[in-house]
Length: 339
Image (cartoon, rainbow, N blue to C red; front, side, top):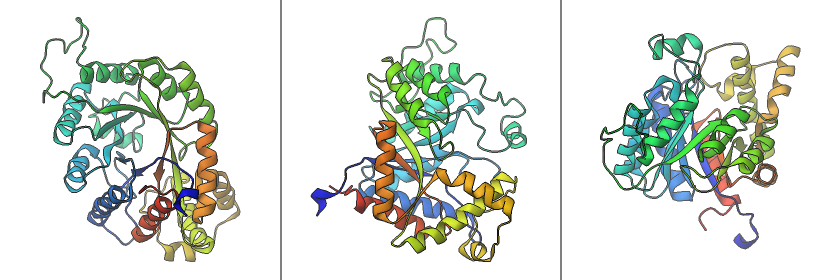
């Protein structure tokens, strides 16, 4: 039976969602549980996202969570999906992820992005009024590459400064993006690239293929790309549709600027969308792959082929933590990850 199952390298992206009726502590505990399960099931990597000032997600410091996850997992790679680099000193980020790499050798990924991970008022509060909206992002990524490789140019501010801890391995370095900006930057600097299909469901395959065509060896010797996809997988179509209805409300909240926890199934059952709501839901649905294992696997394989992706990174946010774990269990079985 397992020999007939399609093969696909899968990873996890976790936003530590806070579901209505649950606390942030519940959400963080669910992240630890999911990481341990993903490690046992055969997922390739586990990434934690950075967000600020949002009731629906609660991890503002992926580097802290990664230290916790490393202590309770054995094999799976751990990384940021991603660190919002415009807030930070590249030197300090390099130190943090070298520290993680020292603790968990050959298991650490550093994914960086330029989005604020929240609204602009929050962004300015995080950055003490100095949020640069990503203007300095290309130079910051270049600096990270220099620092992690240990080949800082002679005229660089950090030239001659000891970067600790001194180790002989380094994290994988990724650029995350939802447009051609990130793909072009990753190709130019020789970095790995992950396209956020769960944010932008249109045109990502062209960006990913252009990244491969334009890749120049740098931090990494060869191109490697992933597509980050939003997936809800359930045992039956009816269960999947029920779970997707809560996600529909979540995306309506985001479209209307409502800062709230992830809707529960009870809230979804009581909700009656307006005509305007239906139009927004229809517009946002292409960002989701939803259905039974067979239905989801077929769509995921098709997307992998369109992107020429080396792997898919799965984000799943549902109205219950148990249903979220079930999505990853079903996917692991559908693609025979344990093998």
